[in-house]
Length: 122
Image 1: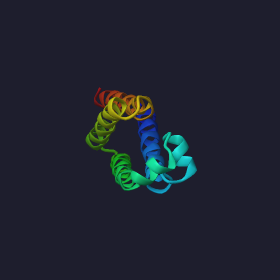
Image 2 (image 1 turned 120 degrees about the horizontal axis):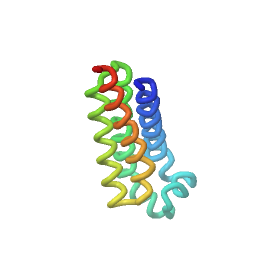
Image 3 (image 1 turned 60 degrees about the vertical axis):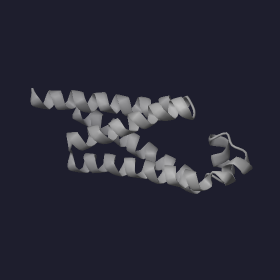
């Protein structure tokens, strides 16, 4: 169970590295504009904000990698909780698909981490 929890946590971390790359380096690129459904004008006017968002996604990934590296339940739970909250907020305020692309995978990883922790204590 712990291996499965760590795999899901790793996938959430990797996805946030991908988001960091998209938001920090490809926001003004046709790829980023297509993924985020933006015109070049909107991309240009929001590029500094996107870089900031990308950096925050990088911090989430770093925290998840830290939790995996140290094999710390509390760190994984904290950062997965942050991703879940961000996914819910993004799904409500920005784009519904964020709920499914960020929030749902983090929720699955969260549940698996909790289950692995319970199995370890039994």
